[in-house]
Amino acid sequence: MSEPYSAMARLHLEPAALRSYLAAPSRPWTGWGELTGRYDRSGEAGGLPWSMHPGPDSASVERWLTDGDDHRAQLRAFLRTAEEPGLAAVEYDEAARTLTVVNLTVHRESFRDPLWFLSVIGGAAEHVGAQGGFAVVRDHIWPGPDDRYTLGVLTVAPSGARALHPVRDSEAYRAAVRTADAVFDTTGLPVGGDDPEEWAGLDPVECLDAL
Image 1 (cartoon, rainbow, N blue to C red):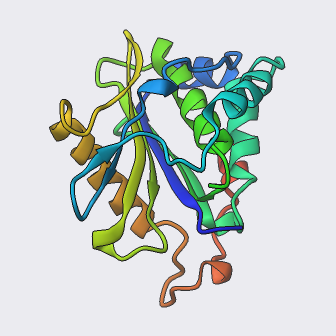
Image 2: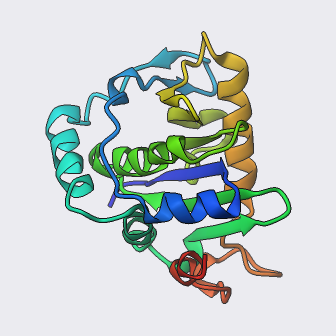
């Protein structure tokens, strides 16, 4: 597998809304054509990488998301794609009323897995509070800090989910990326070490199932 993308989402959900979101049936997000990436070094914005095949891949994701599974089952399957359990995480902060979902190793050979993640997160629009939420898919692990690339940023609000543009929505776009980087940097690292394979924390799927 080539170097993976990393994906992170944070959603503001009251406990009852969290339960209703996880139990609700999944469905495709149709706004993927508006996703716009950004290169950190140059600040240049661009569409999907040429190697991706949005049409066929979106058709595959549509089949996945209309098979009757709820959001919990979709997130469970997505978390299991992580190369190691310690390279993914789920946390619900009861004080802040936020759900955070992370997978550091999202397959990048196609558009399927990034779109799958964004669609499942976009499904929270009918459940989030006024503070909404966001999701980021980003080339975080392998490049140096100045050479990273963001595939896309999704904003989630009660009115719906939409892709942010790195120029027109620059403040919100960059704030989401900064938050995602901070979460990525602290995911899967064992105390006193830097090898995710040595991670001995909770299984992210078990954390999800406990919600």
